Length: 379
Image 1 (tube, rainbow, N blue to C red):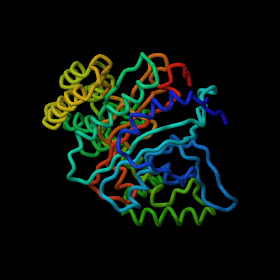
Image 2 (image 1 turned 90 degrees about the horizontal axis):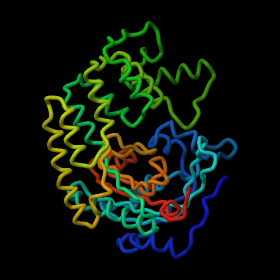
Image 3 (image 1 turned 180 degrees about the vertical axis):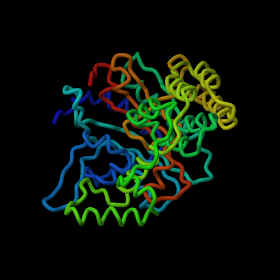
């Protein structure tokens, strides 16, 4: 396993200093995480980058690829509505397409949880400013702060007045480039009719419990067992979504061009917001409200000490982990490029419910890679 080099102790201390001042409780989480839970949260596409471990005959686990979900689980186990946690430790992800990159690396970060009534704008701004200050402390002079918003895409799709099934699918797959490209490519086509006897189509016509039961029966008859910790209910749901996607109406070519144009927007924030408004459809009330909220957020961010010059807004900003459902951001180095962010973070309210927590919990966090923040780091 390729291990990230250590950085000088004084540089690490400088990068960590903003976190030490954040009044957060230190937390540690297990190095080994349940594989099925990780895949549920980050998607099957990341499986190839995980280090999977398994005792003979036991369930599959993986080395910790990130801290957000494990820290969120630890918070939920504590039974409190709010909490602020600081972590520092190793994470593990492979980089098969980049054989020289470290697979074991240091992360430091903060996760912040609030109840449903808490105003989150201040928490978002504090988290953004914290990540920026920490990244800058490493000594690089080529940093920029890239902003995004997963919720903004949902508001944009709403403006287009699409069929509900199609709108829902677009929002669900926006973080999965291959599926989104396929959806845009079929623009102008008619929906497919239900296939005769295809398993996915048969399951799509059944209630969820019946679909799960049928899939389990097929496994038993074939003498096979699922792998990767996924049960019949989840696999049936994925097959149903596949069938529904084929049956759903397609985008018109004009709508597909609008969606592609939205995701391509990358500019200084004000210019980006203007471009998004120009691409929107007629039902744009929610989108205008979301963009108005961004004006407030930007003002507070500048007041918190983040300079305006390095700010950029990217409508298609995404992460390897697809649980972000609101504000998202990355601190990038011009030398390292967009594929190797120095820091990243955002809102992930929905993750708490997926982990068994409250439906209306609030969460925001950030992480920094100290070696990438280091002025002489190249990984």
